Image 1 (cartoon, rainbow, N blue to C red):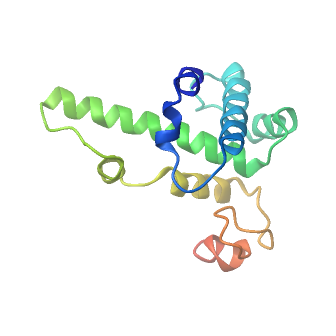
Image 2: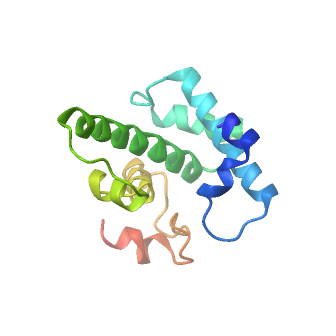
Length: 145
């Protein structure tokens, strides 16, 4: 991630309108959370809710931030595994991000929402982590109730 920032290519991955400072802060937070959790478990598969709570305290972020970053990481690992399988089989590789999403079957945001709801770390009356502006019970939590 540091190389991408130095080269300036990370701007190509950003959709929407954000300032460079906002993007830089988001990448710093993302890096700090991954470094902290990586020191506990490099694979990210054996992390407990107490590890995630510690990351929230150490990295000055929310549990939703931690869950979304872990979801992006696990989604990327799954996408890489499926792309390598396609490569071994000699099938054509996806050429766009939407094709990769179709290959994996979900988006990183969907995985993050599911993980956050499963942990029970979000109150039904809290704002929804998808940032829709609705309460969790009226938005993403309505399907789980």
